[in-house]
Image 1 (cartoon, rainbow, N blue to C red):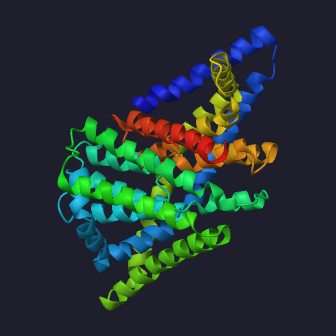
Image 2: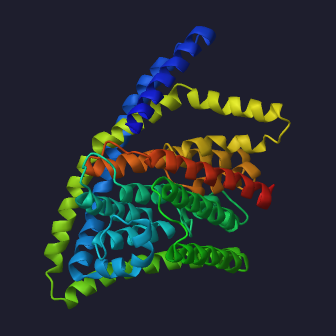
Image 3: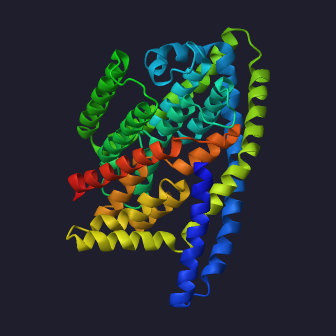
Length: 410
């Protein structure tokens, strides 16, 4: 129901703004832009879904091998002390816990191409435990909000873009991104725990959160002591080596158990194809709503309004130039990436706005895209408190990103 209201809100807001522009400014092209945006967004949604087909087939094929070889159950047992508290609905030893662990690990390493297919497989496994197939379970909501918070330790793509735009030190946004995305994830976990009445004072959870804070602090210290070139080198090398280890490890484990690895891979790949086709209408719907909202000029009105309020309060308005990236981030990954690149092109990669946009881009993930794709893959229509909790985490990550930008680059 929440997605229904949001989608209607996008369309109605776009219509109202377009009518206002027509009446007060005489802009006769606005409706043409909106209609053009609907076709372009529908095409983008279809192409994005089809583009996922190969990746989904590859990773769901590999996941099928890992599941049959017993590796997923191994990951489940490893994650059980913490995941058993955060996901009490998942039975002990269930493969969903291992798949969730792998998805979160892939996200942390910035391996989006691997994380999405693994996450879709996790949703399918969680759906098997869900008694109400059209309604998100508590475990699904926790998983979705952690995903939407976008915890990323190694923002490889952002550092590559900064290098392309001539940044003197492409990795100087690493620490601000790491802190911002960690805050967003922490808020997501705490928020969902409070709503679902999960006791945060349990020993395993406190130990996990304390370890996570210590780990992030250690990474901050380590990468802050390394030259920029070594940060990029070690980040990329670590991610690629771990990714290759997963692929090779799954195949090797299947071979050692004398499984028909090729046939198992094909069975999993077929599931990837059908999953990609199934999410097309959900992705088209949400992208059309977002596209109409943007094309109408509603986003511009929102940003200008905030800039006016900030200036009226006598506060520094430098951060408002980064608001397009902030507001686009929960709506569209490609849109926010475009805003980030435009900020670096317009203001410079080493400008305050250019760096702020990069930190925001890495602080959280694309909420509405994730909700449409993940829930759409299993036909869930009632998302319950998923979007409110995810938006709170996104807000926390964005506010932290602004503070980090002022702290490091202001």
